[in-house]
Amino acid sequence: MHLATLNVRNTADRWMERRGLLARQLVDLAPDVMGVQELRMFPDQAGWIVREVERRSQGRLRYRVHRRAKTGPAGLWEGIGVLSRLPVVTTAWLDLGAQARVAQRITVRLPGGGLFDVYNAHLGLGGEVLRSGQAQRILDWMVARPPLPAVLLGDLNARPGSPTVELLSRRLRSAHLHVHGCEPLRTAPTPLRRHVTGAGSVLDYVFVNDLLDVDDAGIAFVDADPDDPGLIASDHYGLSVTVTPRASAG
Picture (tube, rainbow, N blue to C red):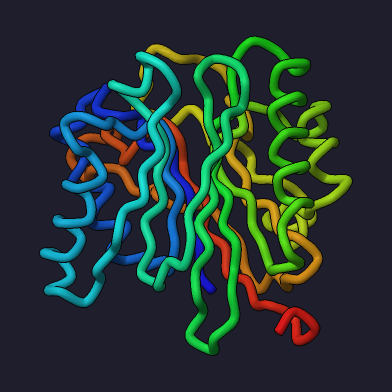
């Protein structure tokens, strides 16, 4: 099972110029399932991405989009989404209770017949108390499910070692940390945000439960335009993770 996540920065910051970079790297990456955050609802940003990926791959990669808008008026503009090449059995969403944020869950059927839960989230700004509360809501939601292999991915707006990440780490494992013994140097910002200074930080994660083995993990969507080093697919780098359900999960 190959997974990816990327905050796509909606249609801000030179979207018309950078969208080809995003689509090309998505074709090269070819994940089975990908979570996206800061997704523009109207016009349909995810729809353009999947059509362009299908075109560039000559029909080899065909994704279905499962969107979830933010709550209230904010949902007219932005939300989150999951792109899946695998059959989706059920979908659900969760109100995270602050800043119109939501999480979503899609359950996919694996080629061998098993089921797999993918949780996608974009946690709020405004402090660790707020984010920890949102993370706890997601954990409680996950615990209420049958014991299936599961991942939680997305832009969590929380740094390594923060209360939010520590809370999640009590129940789940960070895939990148598990494989490499550390988190990436940073996932945000990228050179797309030229006015942002400093070393940046890790804000994006793929967490897995104990019914999964992590085979590989790394940074994705890192390529810049060869003629413009400041033109990157997004203002975040993404993550790419390969996992295998454990035999006991079957």
